[in-house]
Length: 328
View 1 (spheres, rainbow, N blue to C red):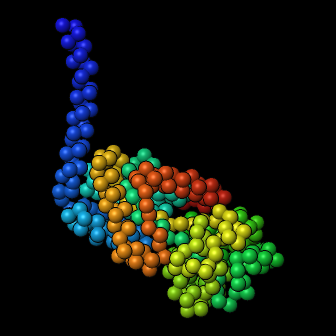
View 2 (view 1 turned 135 degrees about the horizontal axis):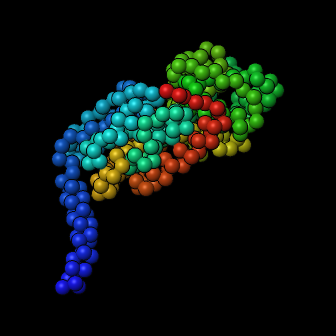
């Protein structure tokens, strides 16, 4: 009798675990059975919104269900991201994660509203976009090395623009200064477009610009001196990386990736990862990303999780060097 009771006690947790696995498998087999919402914690028309719309249409076709984009902007992506963490972990609410809320903001904001690691189940890296070191066409610098030499000859007289304190452009300036030991002055604008306009007008001397600058480069209004990425970009194959010209580790890859709430069944996460990776390998998607100077993502959910963690750690040091803080 006692042996029977003991066996029953031992079997209960095993049966419960088996039941959970079976339920998860059944859920994954029927997923999705209704429309999916993709939360974009930024306004329509920006880089994060573009990434969500690029991937949502073909993903919807593969899953056989509509994917509805919901824009929830505010506080540098924090508001929509924090609201997302309250969603059920059932695969019917996804987030388009990105550099600011998932890697930079945790070091900038005193009140974030979410844990950048514990509250998410990374699904798939969709693509990364590099930034280019650009100067006005009238600049005497024709290479990154010449720009550094000019800055060293005139400490404190060269300035760089950015889209605001804590923006990727600002943090690039911090990395660039640290890597080259130059004294350049930060000039913050309210967004990337105003900073780009100031560069075109010659009001700032340099800018780390996203690929939106490339038409101005092609038109001869700006000069691209280098790309801030580990490898050259196919959109500008003759433009060297900063590493190649002796300025190491100045990398600013803006990333966009799909995330689910923490505790989403692994079967659902793996299904989404498989479908997204398949989409990214299609000729049509590669052509779309090439127009954005974007590199398609690859890898497993675990690979994406490691990438986000590494960026979170890396930007912690960069933000510390910058001294930037946001209190709201």
